[in-house]
Amino acid sequence: MSTTLPINFETRPIIPLAHDYSHGESEPWHQHRCAQLLYSLSGVVSVHTAQGCWIIPPSREVWLPAGVVHQLTITAQVAARTLFVDPFARADLPTVCQVVQVSPLLRELIIAALDLPDRYAPNSRAERVYELILDEIRGMSVLPFNLPEPVSSVLKNLCMLVRDDLAKPWTTSEAATLINLSEHTLLRHFRQEIGFSFSEWVRRAKLMEAMKRLAQGQSVLRVALALGHESQSAFSTVFRRRLGMPPSHYFHLS
Image (cartoon, rainbow, N blue to C red; front, side, top):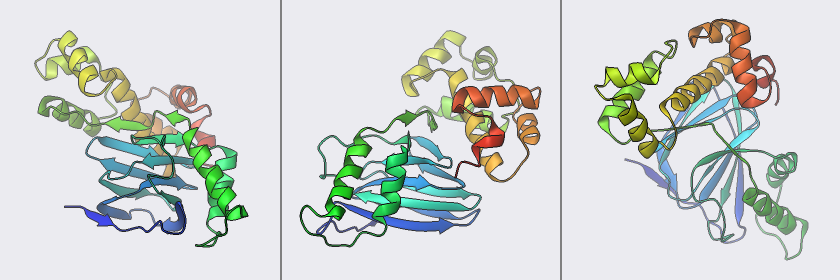
């Protein structure tokens, strides 16, 4: 069962909130009647929904539309900054969960919003900041930090096996044999239920696990070996290709 948390938008379209979490904390299943933009200044937040899992590494954020039931788990020390957004503030706000890139402007606007008054006059600075935040939300770039959950029990079980053994060099052929399907059938079902290939799902699962392990302070070499990479350099190459920088730099952004 989930809890619906009440939020009042009578005086402003956005309600900012700052909250710091300790490693291992979590928030139970709940939902909001408004949209939520959750930004991580440090640490990693995992957002779980019925549709899958979204990972928020440092200096990234997740957008949750109104009514999405979700749960949070925390890795490392997390400095979270949240914007609760009136779903009627703009007609074209995003309608699906997504991890997004934070522009330097939006980052500063989120921080500035924490000091704005609950009530403000028309054409005031506070009104302009809120309106600019809404404009920036509409232009956010989506990042591939989500891991969708399959619908069928067969694919659910397969994905559970993958999560339990991410060091294994999973192939589509081997996975198909494991669940008594042809490779072609597995690929077709995976694309129907997930939207991309089995191989891509495995790569994302490994990347998301890597981000959580790095946030805990594990060495790059230890993470590389735990996820089945032949060497630290091989892992770093994959990480850089996906995120634009080596893992040794990624958690020093904030």
